[in-house]
Length: 106
View 1 (tube, rainbow, N blue to C red):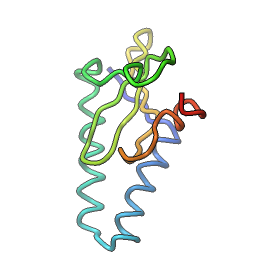
View 2: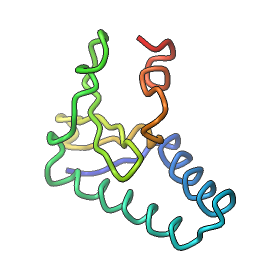
View 3: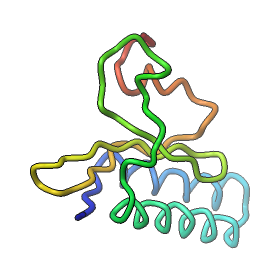
View 4: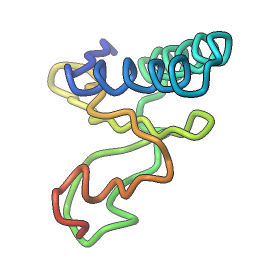
């Protein structure tokens, strides 16, 4: 499957990198985490359905899945018609992802 990364997901990855680099002053960790995220995203082309269904954590009907990388969650959808995976967000695991995905925490 092809992989598409939304502008939002790209911005999320850049923000994670920037935080580790600028706030934690750890350029090696920033590089490592960025590479781990990229590697995990790339593996979605082979086994996209292996993610965890967001619907297990909300009452909303959704086809969004996520995978875990260190302390981060990568949210994505599978588009079977286009044979593609679309990465939507990459966020710290401690964040309330339902508010990010749905805007209201439901």
